[in-house]
Length: 104
Image (cartoon, rainbow, N blue to C red; front, side, top):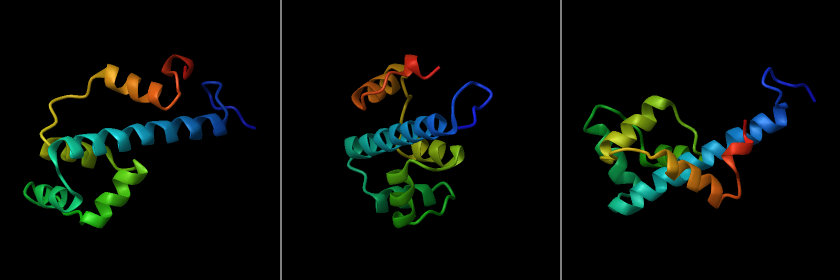
């Protein structure tokens, strides 16, 4: 298996990326749940700032945890998320049985 410049193999890099995608998924689902926001509501809120994403498209992106940084920030904005604490991210990784300190 070929090593990347940081010493990680492609398999390790893909696994780490999947973990980060799962954090995005968990974060957004938790924030939507806290606010009682469904995917159709999210779609309508995004339209109000000029972003057209169908409810089905948003569901797919959130469930996969894959989206552009611009869409992630737009979703955070329309959900009125104040901030993401570093400790929240660490806790999510811990809940998934991962230790971020071993990632580097």
